[in-house]
Amino acid sequence: MTQVLTVSCKLKVSQSQAAKLDATLEAFVHALNWVNQNTPEKVVNPLKLQSLCYRQIRARFGLSSNLAQQVCRRLAGARKVARQKNRPVKAFRGGFATYGRASGA
Image 1 (cartoon, rainbow, N blue to C red):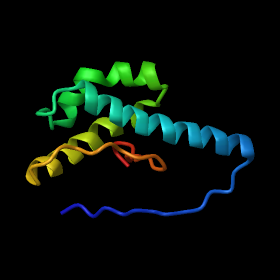
Image 2 (image 1 turned 90 degrees about the vertical axis):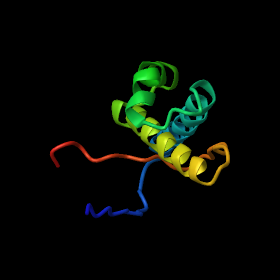
Image 3 (image 1 turned 45 degrees about the vertical axis):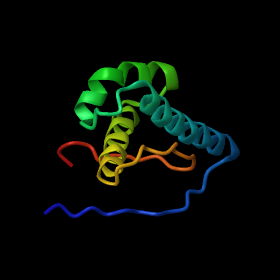
């Protein structure tokens, strides 16, 4: 079994860095909602989602490769849970981004 650790921390950043972080968080959420609205709801495999829209996420929202992949993983997980509960995925709200660890780490 894989153990997952979540780290919550407060970053000390300048105002310009804070603005860039806010823009990244906003782009991440917009990408999640865009992909959810523009891909078939039945697609719950993150690799399939990635093959459908990875390049568009990178180009349209300016996200890093890691974040573009995390959009697909996050949405796939949300769709699986929604399917189990027999309801649609609700719109995502801002204020978060998911980062995956580097492979081999």
